[in-house]
Structures are given as C-alpha cells and as structure tokens.
Length: 218
Image (cartoon, rainbow, N blue to C red):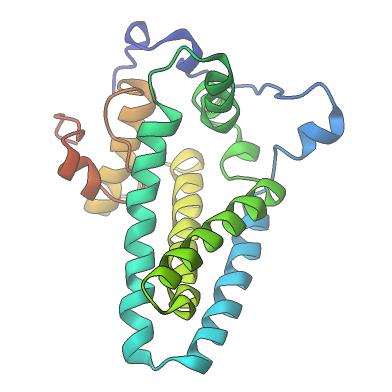
C-alpha cells in the first residue's frame, strides 16, 4: 500500500519508529503508558464480576439481549468517538490538545506499543462515567438494574477493541479474509485517510452506515 503522506496533516503523519512524551513529569508520563495486558486483565475482571452480579438478578433470557446490546453500542461509540471527537475539525487549542493526547500521538507513532490502549487510571475514570450515564438512562426508563447487564457488554466490546487494535499494530495481517480486510482498512485510516475514512476498528458496520468506508478493494 502506497503511503501518501503528502495528503496527511503534519500532526497526523505517521513515523515508523520512535515515541514522544506527553508530559515533562516522569510520573505523569508513566500514567500515559501501559502494557496491553494490564487494561485487558483489569477490564475482564470487571466484566466477569458485574456479569456475575447481573446473573444473580436476571435470567439468561434477559441477560443475553441486553449484554449483546451493550457490545453493539460499544461499536457505535468506538466509531463516533474516533470520528467526531478525535478527528473533529477544530481550531480550539484545548480541544486540539485533547485530540493530541488521546489519539494524535498514536497517529504520529502508531508502532509505539505502550500507547495502544488507555492506561488504567484514566480508563477507570471514564468507565465510571459511562456506568453512571447508563445507570441514569435505565433509571429514566424504569429499571436502573438493567445497567449491570448492558455495562459489562459495553466494556467487553471495549476489551475486544483494545485487543484487536493492539494486534493490528504489532502483527502482520492474518490470512483470514474478513479479519485481513479490517487490518488493511485500519492501515488505510492511518496512512491515507486519517481524517475522513475507516473510523471503525473492530467492525466496518458504522463506516458502511455513515458512508466512510474506503473505496479500495483490499
């Protein structure tokens, strides 16, 4: 695949080697990096524990559809945040800083394995916020306890995302067709269309729905 770097804005141009610091403080800098096994293990423990609590209250017939809905909603969130938060067109300095810290530095150094997943501290803050939002929504519709089914599904979707995304950046594309194409579409996002196409990582569904699927046959 030809790397058409001339089309890519300077702050998103990928470098095949190296890394960069987000903070001058060594302590703060450590909080921005993690080995993939740490967030995967942490989130899986949370998924299993909350799912166990949910199954004490609800039957499998209730659990399965709400859990699956949580996974599906993650895929939509993955697309929406990637496109409309991390790649939103803005000149606001604060927003640009958020974009750079959350995602831009990954575009600059896509092969830095320590920044392929959100570290535990900010991750715990964010999942607490998401759980509170889901709890509030289900409270409004009359059954807040359903949030303990929906939330672990959503979180499992996130675990799948960070695991899959990590593998896309450290391994060669597998031969299995559907997975191979996801690998290559993500490469197109990094090396050709960082601002306009291929925002989905674990699925092409929302790129198809919203018309941002690359035209290349891969």
